[in-house]
Length: 278
View (cartoon, rainbow, N blue to C red):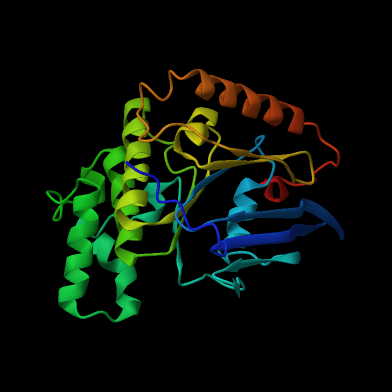
């Protein structure tokens, strides 16, 4: 699977500039994220990693318009994000909460297409293509509760693919499945990036996963959270679960990221509530 690198002169698709986020706690302000700046180019997979509770999910909520930004700016295709962008889709960790158990697989995947007002033939084609891409074209009439956890997450991914977003944001999407299924879903992530030319921003606690999937890894640390390092992941393409993970360069990157995360776990400001840490 080749990596469709953007032209050097192209503008970044997702830009975060001096972003900060604070919560009101006990009458005062607690800053969770401080002055984050990084960008994601079209066609890249970029992972965000950091210590538990550093604010990675809060960052995604700001980037997807689910929470307001306290200061700074985030843009997609040059447009400020001040609400859920139409160009973006989100895949959550908890697929059981995001899928409608009373709807079939086909109807779950079709759900976000309703507001697009597509002709029925086009909507049908998008649903079929998305389900085929994730290997579930045989499960149209089944219900989520009849599927394994990995298959349910494939349905959630297919639903995002049917919507055809420019940017796919994934929040710990493979954390609730077994190791073998996780490897399969990681390879699916690479496949859909290449097949659909999609830009992917991934939050993960799994260091190996961030190295295996990414073109770049953004490491967050300290509190309030700052970018401690952005690493280029120049591993050979196509990537393979066995040969890529056996590379000496893979081990070196994994160790470097682990050391950065461990150093970034040092608390410089206490956080008063669990909500502020998320």
